Image (cartoon, rainbow, N blue to C red; front, top):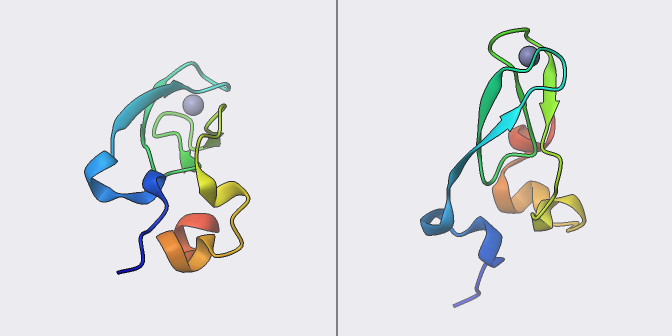
Amino acid sequence: MFRQCPGQDPRNLKVETIVCSFCGYAVEFFSDEIKTICPACRKKVFRKKMPSCVDWCRHAADCIGREKLTF
Ligand SMILES: [Zn+2]
């Protein structure tokens, strides 16, 4: 069976906290998310370091779902 990128294995899904660069709120990120909306100031928060293959992989949209790539 074809193996997915290890970063997208749901068993490896972790929650980490990224501090919002606009208001300082601690925003929870799942490890498969690149960006999310800060619940405090409603601005887009981007994960600073990008350990995920979805940044460069041209199959990213099919791999994790197009709705996660486009906001
Ligand atoms: Zn914020």
